[in-house]
Structures are given as structure tokens and as C-alpha cells.
Length: 170
Length: 121
Image 1 (cartoon, rainbow over the protein chains, first blue to last red):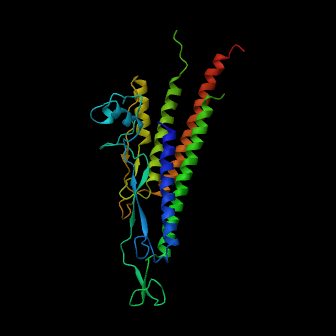
Image 2: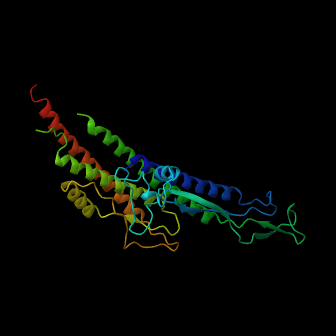
Image 3: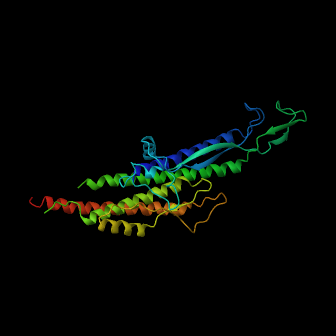
């Protein structure tokens, strides 16, 4: 059982949540952007989280490199000295989270009548990104909360490591 | 007479600390995946695991692996995720306290051995 591994789990979540907050910030910053490199108005982005695949740790890479056949838990390096958490079904506990992809919203842009605008179409309508500040703020709040939750988990883990160091002190 | 520094109690406290660490690990994994679609909360039965660890220690076997199970009775969100922020926060605090208690007990136990070593002073 490794407490530092736990910190990595929480760290991966903090990284992912920060990325989510960055994407929200980009959406809000570009709420009025009518020109992009790909042409047309800016399109709202959002992130998709995915749990890290279990059994992708050092031990498994090592077992794989050592030419272990079958699953990593059955490899020569897997023994009582390296206890892993095994689910009753298959696989182990997800060691963290990552952003699988950043997807673009496919909803149609908002059309606003502004014939004087340089990006206005022949009918005088300008295509603006369909970004709702409320949705973005709620998403930002969620990201902030989850970030705080995971940072308090890191604090807890730090406290535990520190107190584990006290065992040997007399 | 053989030398025995580790007492039975200190081994048991060791298992207790291992379980508290496993609990923290699961809580951290749940917290990390609070926004992952389809993720299900995982947990362990502390009492059963502790009992199992004590039994295998008494029988002289190597400790068995911690059994992780899906937690029932939580409300799933529309995306299939059922992580509860409150449950995880409480679990984190509880596991932290358990760990602190274990450390305090282990220190006490070690102090007893140290006192025996320094009994001539």
C-alpha cells in the first residue's frame, strides 16, 4: 500500500479539473468570437473525463517487460510483496482520472442581425457562438469544487505521510 | 529464547494501518473520478477485512488481498456516476482519524519495547 500513489490519484484529478476550468475560461473568453482559424464562429468546447485504466502501473509494465505471460497479476513479479487491490469482477481500482478528449459542441450558432458587422452574411445576420454564461459558470463552479475536494484529499494524504514518519520517533 | 521485537499487537496495528491506507486510496480514487461518466463508487468492508487480516496473522499466513467491492445504495446521476461528495468527504476524515489512532497506538507499543531495552538505565 503506497500513500504516494494516492497522491498521484488526487493529483491527476486536480490536473483534469484545472484543464476543465481552462476550457470553460476559453469558452467565456470566446463568447463573442466570430472568426476562427477553421472559419465561422467559435464553437463551445467541453471535456470528457475517463477513469485511468487499472493495471497500468509500474509493476505491470515491469512484468510485461520481463515477458510475463497472461495478466500482470499472474506474472512472476506479482507476489504477496506487491499486494494490489482486486475487484471481485475483474481489474483493479482506477488509479486516477484523465481527460479522454475535448469535444466541440455541434449546436448551431446564434444568428444576430447586424448588417454593419464585417462578418455579417449577405442577409445581414452574424453567426455568434452559442455560449450561455450560466452554463459556463455552473461548469466552472463544479470544476472549482472538485479541485478543492481533491486538494483536501492531498492535504489528508500529506498529513498521513507526516504522521507515519512519527512512528519511529521516540 | 528467540528475540522477538515485534509484538502480536504491533502486527495487528500494522494491518490496521494498511487497511486505513487502502481506504484512503479508494476514497481518493472515488474523489478523482467524481466527474467521470459511468464511474461506480468502490469501497471495502473494514470490519471484515480487519478480521481476515487478524485471522491470517494468527494462522501465520501472508495477509490476503484486500477485497474491493462496489458500494450499493448510492444515487446515480444521469451519466451513470454515483460518487457522493459527502460520503467521500466523511470517509476521508474517518480514514485519517483511523490512521492517526493507529500511529499513536504503534508508537505506544514501540515505546514499551524501547523501555524494555533501556530498562538498565
